[in-house]
Length: 230
Image (tube, rainbow, N blue to C red; front, side, top):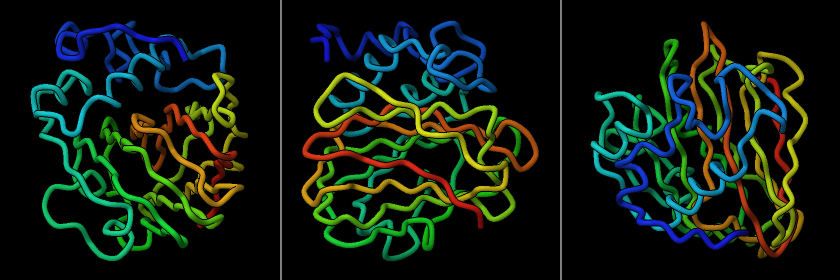
């Protein structure tokens, strides 16, 4: 990966990366679009680099990322906390325009969706999930789940993943249909690491449809990303 020499505070303040259709600076182009040709990999990796240097985001920083003044400060939970019970407060699963940082490692299946599914969002609702260097000491999955009323938008799928310690990205197959509501991240090797700064961006594109964009970098193994029907 290139060595980005940037001032991280000015990076967001200058609006160089914004997760919104309204800005040409979106790494993923139009929200309702899919395909590697729609991704500006330099911007997507720059955003990864920015997030890798942050442990939290202020409401002002979040507002610029989401292009919405109603955004709030980020929240943080360990993977285990998110999978073991409802999170207290304005977490990124239940609350709109909230960045959710996920820390810690796991050694067994981590079904976050069973305890903290994403809210039933209205069109334009947004969420950003940020991984902070998580080691998966298991070949079981991390599961994130939409509300049962929602499904991943096949026309708005651009969630890319790197190879094992490489700068080569692949785009997993689009969901089988627009009603798939589980997103699974499965390591093929115990001890694989989701690198600090990896992110998943969700935006509700229409009634019951959710765009999934993002960049996940890994080392120590290969990560499989898949969706499943309810």
